Length: 178
Image 1: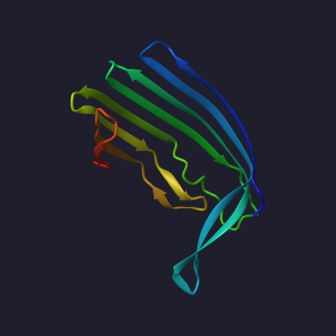
Image 2: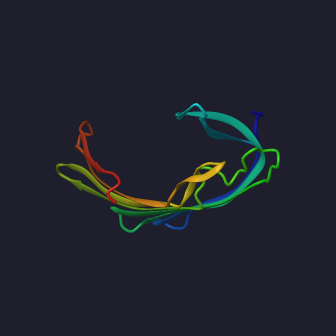
Image 3: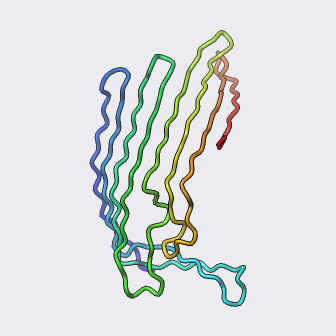
């Protein structure tokens, strides 16, 4: 495959509005020429063998926005919200044997909402946190929509402790509670 060329433009702002509110907002555009992609083809003699091939398409564009908002509701309690939006398009390429149906691993939306509570005690420092993450539908391969990952959400929680001296740590973490 040929090397790909990417022209990238990004415009963003990071702003502390006051002592309790911070935002990071980014608008971006990616313009690929000779974009590389991987195709997976079964071996005609053994369908348990999958061959990976690197190839190029004429190009693609991805435009999007990412926003992160942090709110310190109190000295000990923080809420974070992150939102991402992508608009991806692929140039038609009549020279390809199999048409490209979209860009892999490119969900339209992602959202993350998290909260944490910090507590200082005579036994040490405790942090309790939880969050929910959602990722919209996305393709696993560019040349087939038969392997589509449906949108999903995960719920996570944790509790962590650090000794007053800072030389002992412990934590319990729960992933994908949904």
